[in-house]
Image (cartoon, rainbow, N blue to C red; front, top):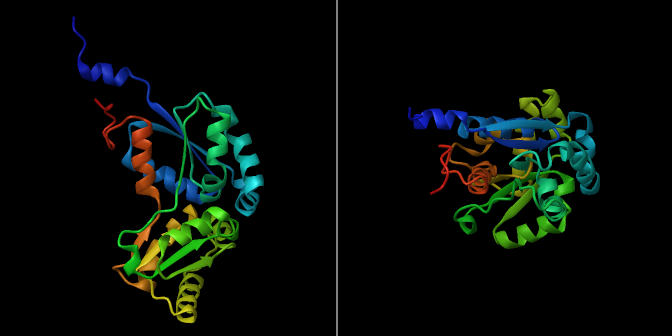
Length: 234
């Protein structure tokens, strides 16, 4: 008796993907993947306990990330860093050290028509002081301002970031810097939680770049999937 194609699909083991981060941003990215790529099994490795250390210094972030993901190296199809600091400072390190394991991370996005629009970048001090970040700013070649919000990731994790603080911070910064952005780049995955407030402050036509869609395309390519269908490329 011939087996149906559906039965064959159902018996195939799901691709396993680890999402690592230090807090709520990783949960947001894992949720995004779960919604848009339901054919994979997502393993959330969120190091809440060491969140402050991971967001503060890249060497400490690398050390803690390596310890957290070590049990999965060589046992999963892909490991994703939903953390910009680890991505820009340590992704090459992990790829060189563990060459049989696939790694990806959240990159900085380059906005469409970026030269015509004022751009605000939300990030943390540890990211902003890296040479990778300064090289990224140089390539943008437009009126760009960086707003460092070091204490906000912890407040987002704990649910203590008030809407009034968000609005007051954005409005005062925009007025002080004479920047009225049409683009906002989120260089910290935690800040995806702020999209409604960003649009209230800067208008409904604001274009927000969070790196999620770009990462999604890279994930599908790395896993040899066509979009979110779960079909292997022919």
